[in-house]
Length: 325
Ligand SMILES: Nc1ncnc2c1ncn2[C@@H]1O[C@H](COP(=O)(O)OP(=O)(O)OP(=O)(O)O)[C@@H](O)[C@H]1O
Ligand SMILES: [Mg+2]
Image 1 (cartoon, rainbow, N blue to C red):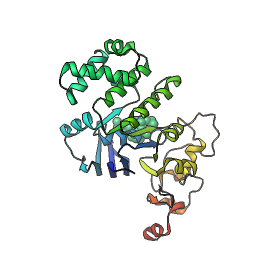
Image 2 (cartoon, protein in one colour):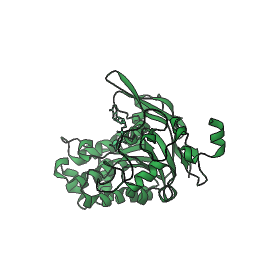
Image 3 (cartoon, helix red, strand yellow):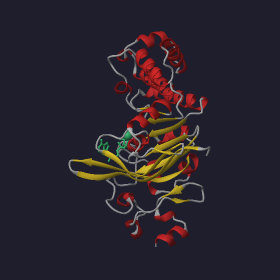
Image 4 (cartoon, rainbow, N blue to C red):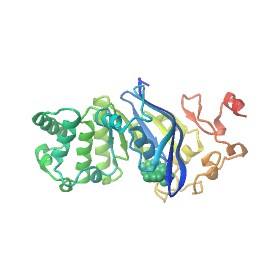
């Protein structure tokens, strides 16, 4: 990896709801290098969005990062105030979310919103900001930038709105874009175009991307490295080709075979029972055909010979097994 710009160490996030407290992220460690395209994959509810939002200090109300570190270019963001985080979000870490309509203000013209962001974070001069905005709309392959500049969000298609948000994300030359299911809400016909646009611009500008997706095909095409999440933990990580061609965690194998539910079309055959995570030990043991006694303990994410890592007792090198036995 190139120099890591983002290092997450043993991050834990708690969610409080109706008087109860639940761990939604536990012991998450992840690194993103300069210009790297890293993927985060896992079925619905595994914690992908929580992790993406924790990085820029955007956790939902009631959720709190309580353990670990989030190091941005060496600076620990845990406990950083909103002023620091919001300055960082405008200049270094940008977000593209799933639903472009909710990310745009319906009462303001598109150009005005783009100019506002540019003026706040990059170029205070109004005329220069407008020129930059029009240039960015052209960069995201919008054929009539002046028309889109003057349009209201509801006048644009979903694909066009997402292009505008991609322009907005790149407007302040961020070092990292967290893209949370950026094409899931779009028509199938434009999904590939919008994703390829995002990745092309990122590569041209050496912008790193943390691409969150439940679509393993998208991750395979786009990402150099991948992190697989299950029940709030990372269960496998490594070079994408290595992980997807030779998955070492039974959950990763299940994802590739097709799990029931949102992850894959329901028509796919699968060998695994549906069901929730186990309450203790390895969370996947309640659905895992290979589970054995040892799985009553949480397995550490242990390095593998492939340079990746997996959190499964079946793959623990002797030293880890010995140390935790
Ligand atoms: N606002 C919230 N308050 C409390 N818990 C939440 C909140 N939002 C999500 N959760 C819980 O946190 C866990 C992780 O949710 P998250 O949204 O990160 O999953 P995800 O992997 O992004 O799923 P999806 O693929 O459906 O987007 C889930 O158990 C979810 O129920
Ligand atoms: Mg999500």
